[in-house]
Image (cartoon, one colour):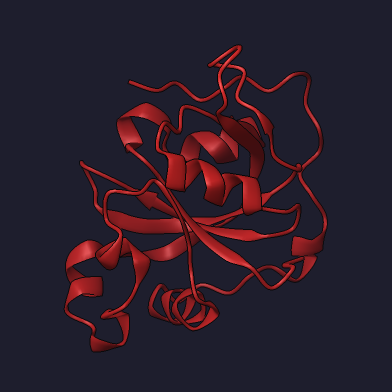
Length: 160
């Protein structure tokens, strides 16, 4: 399933929780208004895997999503130069990995969640991705190569 590139994407659970992504089957990742994060979105390709981080309330990596589409214009910003991709759920973590645990783990000293904490979309080294899977006691499903069934026009996720 993965093309060898990994990302971390953030959403407040009260805005768009991982459970909502599972219920919806897919969503447009919209509302990113930072140039570096936008450029990261533009670098994504279908099949890339994303760690899904709940920011603010829970502060934990809670699952894995997959990039489903090539980057395109963000429909929530018509006429502006912002980007979005569609993502779908892969697997919820058996045990979410909290920010406190990540900060207390020396192997994460250069993890983008800590070093680029203000960014909502960051590239993630494979070793960090794999370590988080291990810490969460989660395995990627063997059938992960199959993408979620398309639904009619996905709704952009709500942004504050």
